[in-house]
Length: 418
Image (cartoon, rainbow, N blue to C red; front, side, top):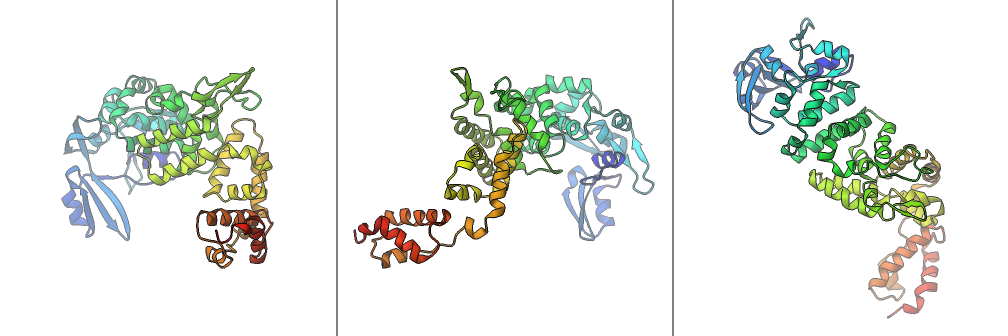
């Protein structure tokens, strides 16, 4: 039932299977020895069979939605009634598992052929039942390469403000699905076209019309640059942290653009972008770990401009940033969606390939105990000495304890015993 039948009709591999039946929950439990009644009141039972978990739902109809998500009353019903409560015609198909016969009460097969996302019944009613369906319409259209049917599209635009009645977590998860799967750029453009972008991510919408220097950004304004990055995303499902960093990395440009002597500049846009990204992720209830990684990617994304001028120790510290492959990926997208030059990207790749792990993470050759044994008094100076010794290691100036001792004595020997 639902999306899995749609995918099978389209020759795609379903992500999961939606099983529906006329059997009541108690009858399902009587048939299968291992079940979990996760939502028996709504007719949903988990069947555990040969180590797999299957969600089995009884045909039902729903009435009187009052909060934009949950029905006030659920009644067991027929297959047709079950189909008629669903969101879009392309998700309203059923298939008999024994004969593989497709059952279509709502014109879903025709809409698949036409490449249309259309609600089952009046779109305003479907979106009132669950406001998140507006975002789901965008996601299905983007990922399937479909158009949104005219009346359905108009209803989204007319009800965009209702999206604020949906929890931040559900909005975040749906947006993440849009930007981490095929069709992400089209999904972002549909969000903008419908007005959903302005409601959910006004910080990204604000990038429209923020013009950039053409010699570096022939693609156009900051919004065009941002969405164009998703043209170059690789993989069926992208890392969500990379996708969010790409979406938010230049949001500070809307607040920092200035023209000096005829030249466009965005001084401080990284700092302002970090502030904006943090607010967005707090609003959408991101996990602490995801927030930390996205902010780290944004914070360092401009450093690639200077990698060829970096001292060896600075470059090595940069290359060993946590999850540096994500930093590289973001830089690659940033370049491909603008000037197209990957010189610094290649430079970093070559540096990574030429350096051993020991060269990037040299073993500690002295400790605080060594400094004490050489006559130094414990204190703040210890941290300075240990860091500069590691810098000297990264620069290739010292590699043994003896060389480190000579280095230390030359710089700080006079401070012993103080």
